[in-house]
Length: 128
Image (cartoon, rainbow, N blue to C red):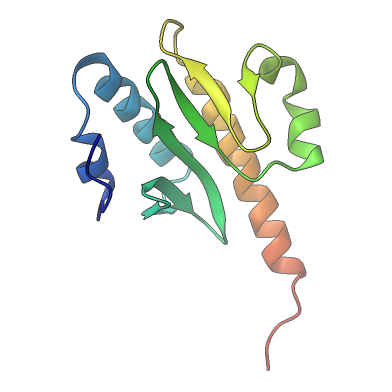
């Protein structure tokens, strides 16, 4: 993947072929269904979705797809059992290419992140 000046999610995903592209599209569709009003953007040269702040990012790697999102202690506790099946770093969850995508889990994470962002936005003092 040589190109690094993506202007859209379509442009990003068009750099992939076959099953990898299909998996990326399935994740994109799942996010759009879970957060239909979220803004689709490119951030850090990967697809991202915003709703009162960033909800989730995703990107393709050689043997997996990474989901990145701001982790909160509450989110990690909520999905602890399901997340334990996957390799995680401080900023990403790795979904191995050889395993089915956990689309329901992705949907629920996005919905959880939406609620977190909405609550955070509601608790901010209004600007006068």
